[in-house]
Length: 90
Image (cartoon, rainbow, N blue to C red):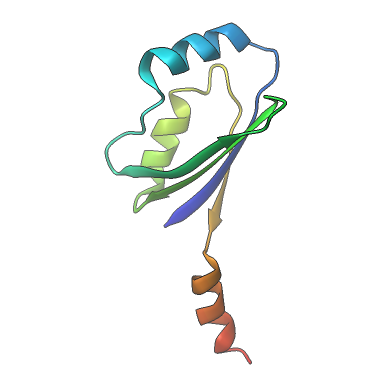
C-alpha cells in the first residue's frame, strides 16, 4: 500500500533536523520503501511517497522523528489504480 506523507518544516529544531538528516539520511525501517521524497524550495514543507504492507512500520518510521517533525499520512493510489476502479463504475 502506498502512503503520501507530508510534513511542515518549521523553525522549531531546524538545526537538529539538518544534523540528524545528514548523519543518517533518514532511512526507513525494513518493510518501508521510499518511492520519492521532496522538499519545497522555501524549505518549509516536505513530501514523501512510501510503500509498505504494514501501516505499523510507517508509524514506527514517523515516530523516530516525531520529537521534531509533525507528520500527516494518507493512503494513496496511483492513476492506474484509480482508473481500474473507476472504469468499473462507468
